[in-house]
Picture 1 (spheres, rainbow, N blue to C red):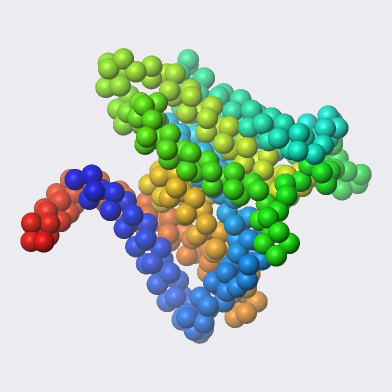
Picture 2 (spheres, rainbow, N blue to C red; picture 1 turned 135 degrees about the horizontal axis):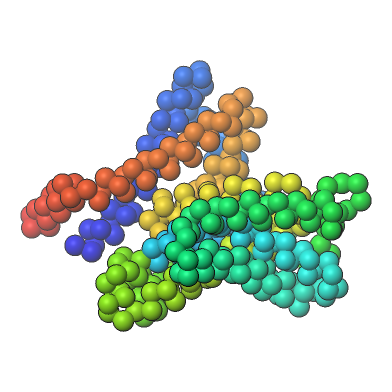
Length: 353
């Protein structure tokens, strides 16, 4: 039974991606273009050289962090929609530390990343505390905190740390930038941190007792409470941990790619992370894989537009279709009639084999 469920969790996202690409191909045909040639340009833009692959991985990096943020909290049965705000606050805390402390080199990078994670954890703890103490809806609180974080970031880069007449902060020193693997493969080390967190999160959730208890709270908090689990403690922990991941992601994005704060920093990463986590069935490793697919679409979109004069909106449509089909497919699989059909059908196959 468990093997069947795990198999369907893999099949649904894969089918969603395939169907989305097929419909995208139909749209491209309607535009009078060759879909095979178009997808050739799309994938060559993402995989055409080692440098392009590296750029795709860098684009995927923040999506992995915010996807893990959503996946981790959802596993505990709470809905942390504040990944974007926590991401932004992590970057804001890091830029303040780097600008004001004067600590550079490896020590400066390490401390900045830790401070970014701590800022994200504090920002994530706010909706958690309000939920367990006042019973407030965490979705509303976390969404509203996104706006607070974005507005505060705007105040920082237009006033407190403004770089002259330009509405942006000073660039971080060269010695505090995350190093890249090589000039021919310019992937900064933040990508490896994101991948490490994906595997570490998977191990924690599925191979540790604490992870089991956290998932038990997410599946049925009432049953977990009567079995002696400290439900409120796990709820708060999930907010703090997921906020720390998002804050670390914001700090990594600052040190690895953006190098300064400006308008639009972190915009859309939070809700993209939620979609990625849902498509990946809340699996941390799957979240990293889906984030990479989203990055492929984003990186290849510009090549598709320049190579075949196809608007980038087509790629946005494909991405939206992936989300719709994956979420709809997951919802359908939870219907009793469909679950019964799949179990009986697959059971017959097993007996025949």
